[in-house]
Amino acid sequence: MPEVLSALFAMNPMKISQNIAISENGFLFNPATGDSFSTNACGKEIIRLLQEGQSQAQILEALQREFEVDQASLEKDLADFLYMLGNYRLLDANAQ
Amino acid sequence: MPLKTYERPYLRKLNAGLGNKFGTRNSQVPVTEIDGVPVAKLMEEYGSPCFVLSEQTIRQTYRNAVRAFSTRYPKVQMAWSYKTNYLNAVCRIFHDEGSWAEVVSIFEYRKALANGVPGTQILFNGPDKSEDDLRTAVQHGSLIHIDHLDEVYLLSEILASEGLKARVALRINMDTGVYPLWDRFGFNYENGSAWTAVTKVMAQPRMELVGLHCHIGTYMLSAQAYAVASHKLCDLADEIRKQYQRRIEYLDLGGGFASGNTLKGSYLQGSDVIPTMDDYAEAITSTILQHPFAMSGEIPTLYLESGRALIDDAGYLLGSVLALKRLGDGRRATIMDFGVNLLFTSFWYEHRISPAQEYSSHHEDMVLYGPLCMNIDVVRENVSLPLLKRGDRVVVHRVGAYNMTQWMQFIQMRPNVVLIDRQGQVHLIRRRETVDTLNEMELTPLHLELGQGKPA
Image (cartoon, rainbow over all chains, first blue to last red; front, side, top):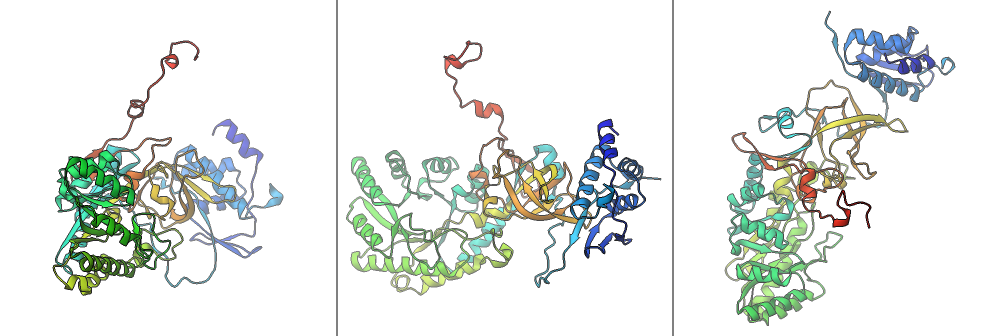
């Protein structure tokens, strides 16, 4: 991972709200707000890794081991996905 | 262990709302080929973006229109509306099918002549006909559709100086119950201007009034409006017969027939709300055939100048994703390599856009922007598409009308246009522009030539 991005990710550790429920087929429910969401296999994996407390750098590495994807695309897509988690208030504000 | 196929992570909020009794249309079916030719191959050979036209669809659509009218009316003549798409290959297909030419400028007129259309089979419409233009049309024996009184006087002078006669028609505008009225072209029926024009033309010994013409609007969603127009033209023709004992030879009902595109703001898909060609044909032909004018002698020939409805379905625009981004409010934005510069009709249509490769079932709402560094460059304000990524290909449908004539050379150059013939062979029919194409027309003053020192 480029140093700049690694540093950026390290500076912004993100944690998903612990009470988020996610089903096997990618149905997401936030009991705090009553909102529900749908996600795909890659999104589900990111949420699982976030729930395990993995850092963004670790998530990137894990996804690269699992999926056939180049690093640049993955970095862009992960940043976008994390942004959307935050946008939908699915990240733990206290952890940021 | 092999790696899994990657699809970018996606998160969609599920909104419970009122049920939609119409259901949702699945627009995600990939379109991987056009007339049997792979989209990927077309884009590899001719670039992205690229316009594609289907000869098969053009001919089928044309024949369907001819069938709709000629099975109801014995004397029908189509005249291809050049302004809708005046690529020579396209025009020649219509002429090959038996269509005459309908032109609105001397540029189009000369194109029609060069495409082998005899002057006598060209209808010359529009408000802009210069003295030279009219002289050319007269010399070729074309049908001149007069738009205003100034044209009557100008044409009269030309005919006198040339010692020639001209066969002319009058363009009539009228209230057909569809608003806004198109009253800027021709002479108004209701306020008497049309009859005044008739008397002026009938007083010209060198003009033979042979036709009446109207074009009541564009993308007409009511076939009934054509019945009203046909009735009024017949009334006028009948009055001319009674007052002058002159028989009008043809009625030209123009065009304005809708294509299957969806207008912005329309709740239902375009193809669900537009009248069929048979609806238009029935409204026009039954009105004329039942009118006393048609029953009083030889029935007039029916001329039609349909453009959009005959070519829109045959045109496709192929393009690629340049980039993805998030807008400030979290909406997905996708930037395409084509914009309003090529897709002029995206100002009033919600064009159907299909991915050109396989996708999962996931899709997301997005704004579709073009490549121009201009805020107006929006192709779709809200469209649901699969999870696109940079380089993905899309197919825009029903772009055959007006886009290849109203396109703008603005910021970007215009791309290749290809035609797929009935055997599936691909023909380049218009080369993409280059910087040289454009610079060729420019001249640089000597003092601004490079190497001439500081500008004066």
